[in-house]
Length: 371
View 1 (cartoon, helix red, strand yellow):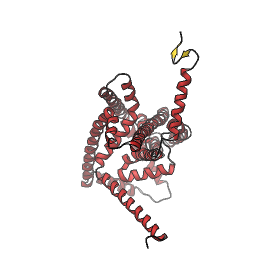
View 2 (spheres, rainbow, N blue to C red; view 1 turned 135 degrees about the horizontal axis):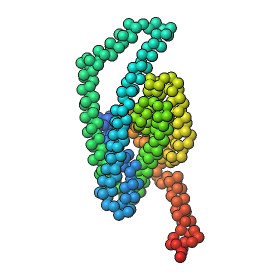
View 3 (cartoon, rainbow, N blue to C red; view 1 turned 90 degrees about the vertical axis):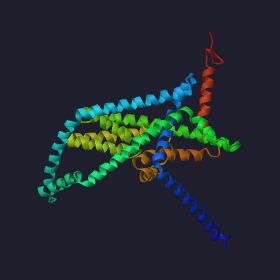
View 4 (cartoon, rainbow, N blue to C red; view 1 turned 30 degrees about the horizontal axis):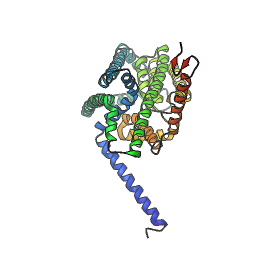
């Protein structure tokens, strides 16, 4: 009975169920050790993005370990300078924002009392008392303790990322070659294609996203500074970080900037901020994404949304950031599984033709200038 049409369908359905069950089991196991998995993924993506710099240093005679140290320490110093700049900006403008927030909250209460919805001062006072009681209760203390535990996990993960990143920058190619040692022939060639493609896609994605995020943050930050919105620099940094979440990140952080402008500067300035955010998003979608990202990310928006949702469910905000590049790498692996990607081979061929044409240009002979 397993050889008729229903039997064949049943066999295939059972196979599909087994594959799904194994995939679910693997995902569950990875989630249980996400304190290790997430730093590993972050360090791999950062190493892929820094690979061109490390390769350039090596080609110019710098040793592997020195190139890794230069790249790692340079990145840490740059990140530290940005954080210091943000702290000073927040410290200088925090008092002004608190005063503006109080005034804006009073205006909001006055506006709520003018609505046809019956809201009296007693209800507002009760809501405020509930908030104060929560912050002074044991429940908030438990939440704060959980926050301390989360901070400890973040610190541990950050240290692990730094250590892993150093070794990947120093010996990333050797580590991948070690994993490929059991393979020969076509399987070895496939492993090399997968490794090269993964590095190119991850590095191109992160570098392209960083460029787009910088443009978004600069445009919105300049607009906030011109409009004299408090905390323009920290808000621009938040926009930069939010832009690493495709589709929704820049929009959500732009809404946050508009809310700050509403509280501090009023509805007119907030509407201008909304217009700036919409214009920047249109510029990003119609110009920056096609030009900067190029071949790094070829995923349909529906696939991106599904990946974002799955990553957020599994690992929160970090999962939302990591899900899309992981999905892009998975699709790139499928494309090169049975052979080189035609688009990559076409770009390489074009590069070889350009170098050959440059070598044969007038005034040169075999690439050597003619006296």
